[in-house]
Amino acid sequence: MSDEVTGGLDEPEGLQPEPGALRLAGDGDAWSRADWEKAAAGVLRRAHRLSDDDPDDAVWAALTHTTYDGIPVTPLGTADQAVAPAVPRPTRVGGWDVRVRAFDGTDVVSELERGATSLWVLAEHVAADTLPAFLDGVLLDVAPVVLETPTLAHAEALVAMGRLHPASNLGATDDTDLVAFARLAIHAGVRAIVVDGVVVHEQGASDAQELAWVLARAAQVLRILEDAGIEPEQALRLIELRVAVTDEQFVSIAKLRAVRVLWARMAELCGVDVTRARVHAVTSRPMTSAYDVHVNLLRTTVAAFAAGVGGADVITTVPFDEPTGEISTLGRRLARNISALLVDESHVARVADPAGGAYAVERLTDDMCQAAWAALGRIEADGEQAFFARVAEVKARREDDVAHRRRPLTGLSEFANPADPAPARRNTAYRYGAAFEELRHNAPEDHVFLATLGPVAEHTARAQFATNLLAAGGIAVDVAGATSGVDVVMAAYDGQAVVCLAGTDSAYAEWGKEVTAVLRAKGARRVIVAGPPTEGADDSCSFGDDAVAFLTRTREALR
Image (cartoon, rainbow, N blue to C red; front, side, top):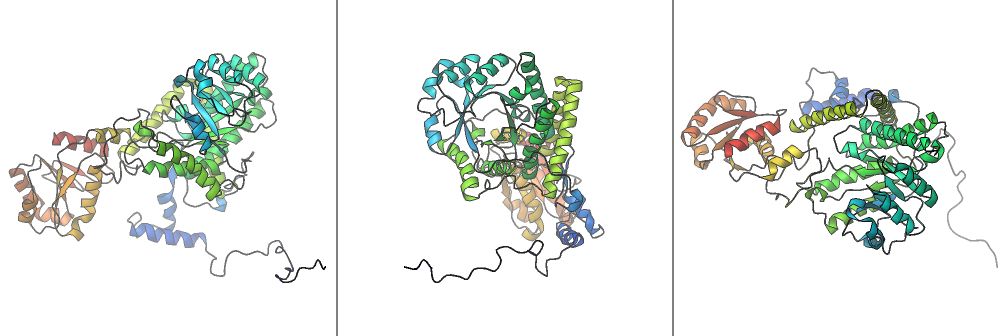
């Protein structure tokens, strides 16, 4: 019997092209930087973000935004941004560790059976003597367990339960019993310490400030352990780093890559060969909202994607309904499934460091390292009190940006739905949109009358702007609709105390004063104009105003 197999395709003459012979671009794809600038400028001119007199290369300034660390994030990566690739690069290939927070009442076995691969146990909710019962059924040598804010009794109880997965962490975060935690972990073959940057992130710190805090805290831990006879080479292996990731995708990717570079530099200064950091990324709680909570799914998915691309070893996705204070079974399931979708369906984890080499990402990584190292120097020089004063400054700048809607929050400060019910109780953790949440929490029952001047085509832009803005404060509107004169507007008016005029500048000039006078005569106590301040109006609202201040004034007038 012949071994020859008939049929099929002919063997290719060459299995791969000659070096330099592969061209992915077609003949019509030879675009230049000037071509891109021209196309982008055309879009911005139609959006009135550039004037006809602005040069095409003004798109760079218009589309570049700056982080709170002063790092520019450009709209396009170009060769002139090239820097040496980050070293060390992330090396994880394959799925990451999907870690879930567990506290009293959490069915930990169910979490592990349904997609979680490790547990983050909040020790303040689980007493040390009940820890064995809480973890009953968990294969501790298969699923890592990490404790948060534990006592030494918690750590001893966990170690006493038997062999632990080497990625388990006893979770020491402060100086109390730090050496005892370290010695216990060395004996058990696990990690002992979490250096937690999320703590300062949730106080409003910028990305570089968070990384600087991680480095400063790690240096303090290494000094304490070295004084106790535990050398840096061994101490570094006892530490896991925890950082926050947000929906600022490229910045978060760079942040995850930067923390490895910074960690390697710290190891080098300790006289230790580059030690691979174990990095736990947690999707940001401050970026979420207690209103229109399903938008949080978009935020956390982008953040988890950034963490995965950035090379995180462990990822915790905050459930979308966590800000409400009532985490549902659906919320926990979707938080786990986000990682499953990214790993198994989107194949984000198939290669190590997929963003490595990209001009923009390498530049952001380098800039982040420089900013964080400089911030570390300031901590070492000025101390913690000065550091937290700088964090407070960043927090105030961010809150001002949120209030002026320069940093929009979808579903909260933009495109809010006033009919969205207030949560029964809210998680009190700091969130960027706290001021808007407070406005929404006790929404006024009375509506604002939206006195639209002229046909729909003329008033719709300002009417939609005013409606969207008022909704962000929990204020609903009653719309007059298409109008042709004062009588038509008044026919729709039903005695509302606050009125907002919405129309073109020419309409305001032509009959704005007249309609304002009639509305006041019929009971309107406060008249707002959508657009620049106008004579005769009590208030105005336009793009760039302090929305929180405006909404607060408007709500007071509705009382």
